[in-house]
Image (tube, rainbow, N blue to C red; front, side, top):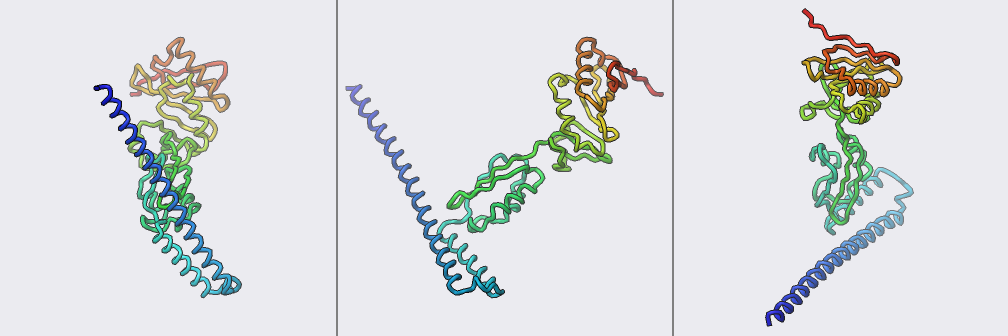
Amino acid sequence: MRYGYVRVLARVACTVRAARAQSSCVALFWTRVNTVWRWRVLMRSVSLVFFAIIASGTMWFWTEETRRLTTRLQTAILLLSVKMGFYLNHIEIIDCVYTPLEHIWAALYIRRGDSIFALNTNFSKQRLEALPWVKSAIVERRLPDMLRLTLVERQGAVLWEQNGQHVLLDTEGAVIVDDVTPFRNLLVVSGEKAPSHLGGLLLLIYDKKNIELPIRSAQFVSGRRWNLQLRARKHDTNVLLLLPEENPAEALQRLSLLNKEHGILRYNLEIVDLRTDDRLVMRPYRLHE
């Protein structure tokens, strides 16, 4: 008897789950049917208005009165779409971390409750991509009442120092923001043309063979080459690396290999000159009186 009750209860549970799944599928089906029906009615109304304009001959004589009439008709169509349920009610934002929500709404130039067809997707895309953090954006309507935004934000890479002030740069050297408080731990670079040569520097210092070097800052010198400042591990000083203009990666790898084998960065050094291929020039640090 006990097993008989268990079987009955299992069948009832399966029946309930099937009924729920069927009801949800039916609800989804009728929602889509309702949306398609409202869309067709709206398009027929718009078509009737359009053919009425052609029939009246106003399309052939584009006067100021015709512009006002067209504007009124557009407003009437947008109001009709709102009454039929095609208004902005939900907004879905994907991959947004740093961009403030109020900046996104300002870029869209639309408010909640407005007709979803009042939104110019191309214009909104351009305005979104003009925001400091946004690298690219995709704007999609999801009828009847949802808008989906897919953002690709810039990645803060380094701090660019100019006249004692810092700004945040992305991996391509573009300025993002001047409020760098959350990014104080990033590498600091300087030099007038440093942003345009930032890509090569990032490839250089984040090479797996050079990753153990404690690089503190970088300076682009004379618009031609980089100087790197290392944090000395044993002494409370900094070591200045003079990199060559050509093949700086090979020079830095040579220093990294020598440091692994002989630990030269453990000594109290002030300058390490790598600009010559066949030699390594080191200047010890001197206490200045």
